[in-house]
Length: 403
Image 1 (cartoon, rainbow, N blue to C red):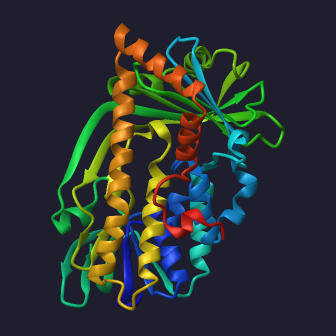
Image 2: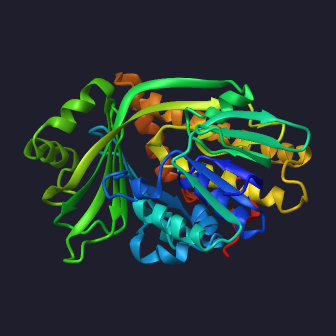
């Protein structure tokens, strides 16, 4: 392990590894510091979640050279069906209506993580420091010193905090954040079902929390599969994790109705607590925040990793123009590119979760009027479909352009 690098990425999750890969590919000497070891992260039970990769995020992963290894493991979202409680009014989005290949793709987190680890292993400019906690970050005129739990000190011209919602880097930078606990948990699992999903993603808004069913790849025996993200009150999550498979499957069937035919649980189930956080700013002296260290949001619109990949594309883009990765003006440009976009999505997802959480007659009527209005207005439908694709707004070049 070297002691000095151009860039140190603190946090080796999906966002941190993607950031490290893109920067190493551009010739920077990059270290990625991760508290977990690869053999832990790639175990089949480590993370059973799936991720929605938008059209724009697919472009970032293509530029990184890993999407090419995921195409046969990714399932396209071509139809989005939005329902509100038991209302007969629904809202349908079809990718064909905007001449798009797909709104996005559903990928198993483990497959994405393996693709990143394998790609990074090929990069000579990259060093993976695993099983290591960062205990101190200190700034100097031209370097940042990063102390690990074993008292090893490495230095870099730039430290990137990609260490999640409870970011040590953000704390060390002295950056405050707005936080809100939803007192909800997201239960995730895979289901088998009789009827094909036909690329449909269901978002069923319920006052207890959204219930989403996302298209997933068929099994080798051609059994149809989808991924479920079921939001429940925090104090109910444990009972759903501990109940019998029969009781859990019956609850899933009741919520899926006949859309998927007969439903059965496929594999394990897990739950994650839901909250929102937004850092007040993203940059310090030779330090910068990306992804959930800067912003974490409700999964109601499936935009968490997609917003992180926008950060990563933007930071990569501004660092392509400088010789010193810690250049203060470059970091300011990155912040100006990302802070408003992230704030808008944080507010939007928080507002949606709150709006659909109300079970009052007047609010229900207003919601349903809104769904009906969007369904009848082509320009409104096009706006929301572009948002779902990650193709709207002031986007980094890597998002706009396919590799």
